[in-house]
Length: 456
Image 1 (cartoon, helix red, strand yellow):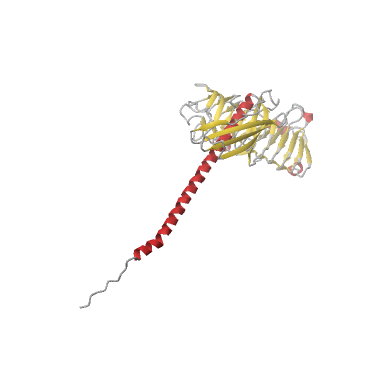
Image 2 (cartoon, one colour):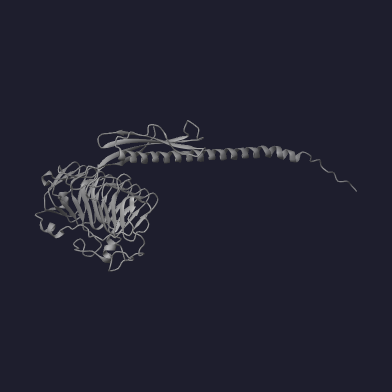
């Protein structure tokens, strides 16, 4: 019987280890390097975020100081905002005049790691344009829809009356820390869901509270509101407990009288213009059809105008109140679906400081636009129909924008005389200042008119 031969396999495992082990070490090293790199990126991003927050804190500080003292020139040195022993954030602000009614504020936020370091790990610099405005005698008045504000929208220098509700989100703000306003809310948006009795004032506990806030929104002023219990996010002095507010009708306008006074009728095509043209709209004119004013066209208005269609203005156009009117405010009455003012449109006041009244009559009721009254479900369905829209720095100092049965929407920024509508919505950076017949009462407020990152 033959014996089996056992082959000598010594060293075969060692060879495999020699081949595999360096690869494992290399892969582990690469993973460790990626982990460390990711951690560094996360820390750098966190420090950049801290620097941005410090920059914003510097901007808030500048608004507070300049509204107290217009000669305030900045912090001089860095101001420590946060220090937890391992990281530190600071802000530094300079403020320079750029004419009698404008300032440029430069805010730089810096973050340091470790906290004892003298060289920042990250910094953010933002330049902010400030504009001086004056409080006037007019404010916002809304119907049963209410007032809705988002992002950085602000109302300064005028009292606010709301028949419906107020909803403020993000950094929306009514009033200033240094200049409070008066806010009255009637909570007249019941029943919910609506029926033929709409609108009526809500009963306690019905349809919630009329004022709501989200994020950093705030009201600085004397607040009276039916059924409002919470005074959170209101100050200077804030909510007046157990106060009553009577619902008020929106301002009257004699539509029939304006129609009866018409002496001239032209088409929308004849009233329209573009490309540096000029037009004159005579007093007591009826314009049939849609009107478009665009591309640096100037229109001078000599008195009341009735437009049966829509009105659209855009691209640096001007609609101008004639100096011959003095303190008499012309009314542009619009029956079409909308009046849109876009791309640096200016509704220009005359030498007496008199602006327009822009009033729309469109609603979702069958009688539109000639309804003498809109109530019930028709009013509920009309309150969020936007018939006046201002966008992209359109402005109307001393002009009243009035959506009789519907909604006014303001995007971005622009000077405005007053707003009236069943619903008013302010979004983005819209800052509303008031002054219609007499622009300003001598009290100056400084507001943000531009915000840009400086990468130098």
